[in-house]
Length: 251
Ligand SMILES: C[S@@+](CC[C@H](N)C(=O)[O-])C[C@H]1O[C@@H](n2cnc3c(N)ncnc32)[C@H](O)[C@@H]1O
Image (tube, rainbow, N blue to C red; front, side, top):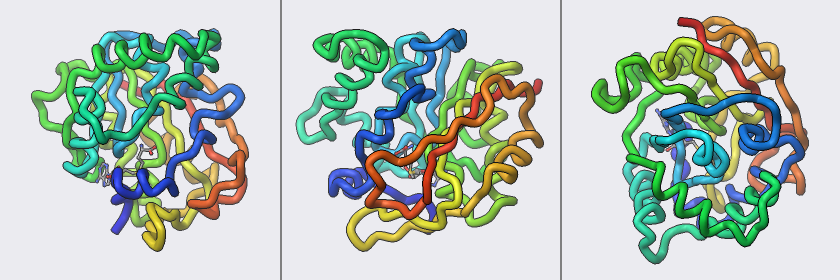
């Protein structure tokens, strides 16, 4: 089954490490640390899983954030953290680290956690394989100002064609000229969601991802940015890099 990584896998420690945010020029920190003027009313995180690192900077520059996932168990984990319930994943070191990336004091982490809890308005179901991935009343008719999606599309798509279509489906959630912030792994064919839980991934190269994007999006505002996994990952064989791109959407 593609992409069914849950909080139990994450808690086992195999899918989460600081390399996901510990990266020079990490695009998730970029809204606050570069000249790129990304921000607005609504940010949707596509395929959140049970994780929050991907919206730790975005929550500062959007007034509303929607988290989404296919699996109820992941949505429940996110809701647990948002409600401050015990037993949820501890995001403190990540929040402190992102504060540092943003040039703030790590001691400001509590303010960031409070801001995140304030702006996340819901955690909703999504299926990127459907032409309408979310319920029609889940977002404003004009669409979101920005989408972020991390390690989702390639891990839930069995082949390039499905990946490409999924990119088009999520584009329907985005307003005209909104931004898509896409992060993923290149040349990855599997990752370990937990000990012994091998999850298949469609291996993609940069040219394939760019071609798929060009089917639906335009104006690549920041070209692709590659960075090595540091430290080398124990949960994937993806050789050297994650991949990121910011794209403006066609109407
Ligand atoms: C590799 S995980 C990535 C999670 C998170 N974004 C991260 O960076 O750690 C892929 C996520 O996609 C979700 N997923 C599986 N099938 C999906 C689908 N058809 N549509 C949207 N998300 C799906 C899984 O539940 C899982 O949380």
